Image (cartoon, rainbow, N blue to C red):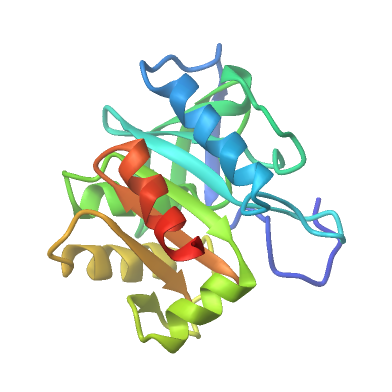
Length: 200
């Protein structure tokens, strides 16, 4: 449970979860390696107040395979740190998952990105205050300041922005989600490249 005043890391959708074995996917190991890279860069992790941030996913069937909730402190998750989002309903604010762990608080936003563009197969949600500010100052793609993370409004705004982009690769700042950025692309490497390009 989040006892921090920070509005972060709390699941805001109605979670319907079924305990199952860890999901399988040919790219799951590669996704976990990418997450470890982000962890080592401080883009995924835990704030000093104990609240975790950042999550990663790959498209899978009707939804995605995504890192689990409350996993920010772990450097290497392995398959048991992920679950399968089998279904979601933005309007009803419901996310259905299967696996050994429940999904990240941003699961609905990840799914909305996949739904918005069929060419996108990886979403990396990171936190970095300098990069977040840089993207906002450059007037890059961003959600409204009034829209908070993990809500149907966030998922809807992100979907509209992604649908309007000519390129399935990109970075999107979440103005109402402090330090929050979504990187996405047709492959894990291309999504990672979006981050690496602005860090150098």
